[in-house]
Image (cartoon, rainbow, N blue to C red; front, side, top):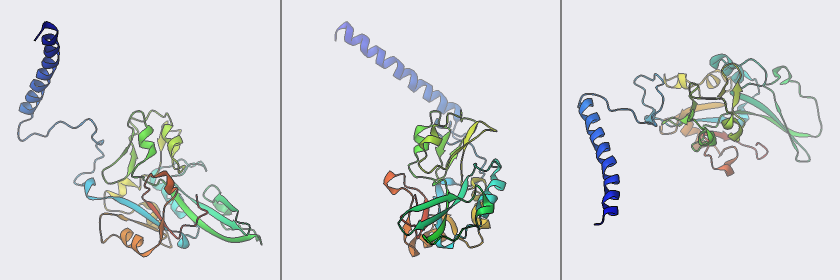
Length: 263
């Protein structure tokens, strides 16, 4: 072994030895009865108590034929999650689709101006009309998580995409990356915001606010890992579709009787 090879080996050996010594000291200090140091990529402490996220995989079903456009879901969501009262801020909203005889689809958000939800002028060119509730799709492969430069947007082990507002720097990259238009910028906190499936409720065994207030039970919430879940039965009994399937984000908001005009 020449001098150059010897020095190269020493450079590689010394840092490795120091790392092993550091790890040994940490293990000795922790002891058998003390918790191990948290991983750098661990989820933020959300105060869940005994709740185990890994035991669940949450999703939502929406039966379009049952939605009557009452907008109670959007109103309950705003009240439950302290969403800004300005008319263009929503975690969930309802769109009215009108399909014309020539195939054109006209879309309007009735949540922006709820007073007009029942004011549908008679139009002989309208073939049919229906309502479609929308929200964050809680993607299994969320683009918003991929673009966040500080890791403020993350996926929990139970399949819900959340935002750590203590980390969020308000760059709005996630808002631009979301293909469903489900995020908005909260000017009060200068952070991004969106639907969380009412995470503070579901971790306590409650339903999301929008599901709880729906008078026609058009929304179904459940655990996709439980065979006894209403959502699993909903998927089995209906023809299911998702929004923008070609994007391969694997949404966990499933629609029954999803019309091809819905986008």
